[in-house]
Length: 363
Image: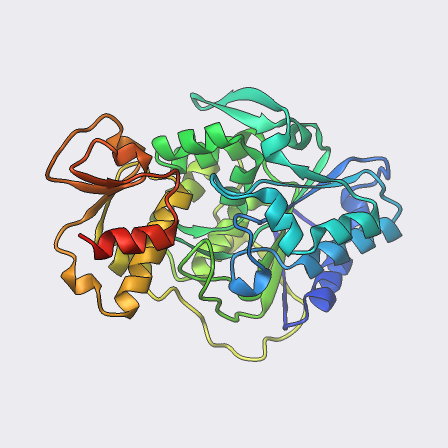
């Protein structure tokens, strides 16, 4: 498998599709030493199952582990961290990773409990999982889906789960895009296998899955996300971290030089696109460096209110994010502990969506 290859397969059976990709990849050509340490990095941003459109299908993980074991690799770990405010261990539990760990004798590493190393890239110092940094070969297993702050998330942003929670918060303070690129300049995946079976095309935390029935693999995380952006109908300029990562030497955005290897034909050619719902709901917010968990809960709360025609009663925008720390304005309304100095504020880090719904109803 060459660096510029993008291998695609279509269908609805993650086991058969993963097997087809692995056979085409020829993992032994990429990892000739059977003593190589390998880490699988799925997306378990929240503790929900894959049918929600938010998390990596565990069947993909199982098939990769089965394949690696068959080929004689034994030094394998599964490494992940949920977003700030959620439990990685609960994500492992609800998706059956404890049984996967036992069956394949593969340890589960919760990055929240890991040791970290402080490294600096492009002027940004961050705490990165020691397990990830010590891994010889990293297989990134992102879900191609929408994101309420960065429009899209796939390979490059999925690496954010390799950070301490403190660094995740800092990334939001810095606006996400440059830090995501800088992280990948320190450590990016050696192989990316993308779960694009039914990702939520609007929300990172899922809830609105869209069946796109495809998976694809590549060795270049920048090329991967450039292709993912194209699939979702975005221009590269819509997702700044992709081009920033290219400038930092992580990979290439040039899809004209990619070699597309299609293993089978899609059942239909309908192109799924984000609905634009997030942009509509976001008009009711005033975010300043908001963390994903907090902002995601607010968007979710606004969505629920919109479904029962209650947003028309909202006469002011809701402030949210670390940028409001220390601000005291009696005329503003906010959610999250960072907005506690405002006239009305719902505290919590992050507040629950259900509490946000009631808070907004009471305004």
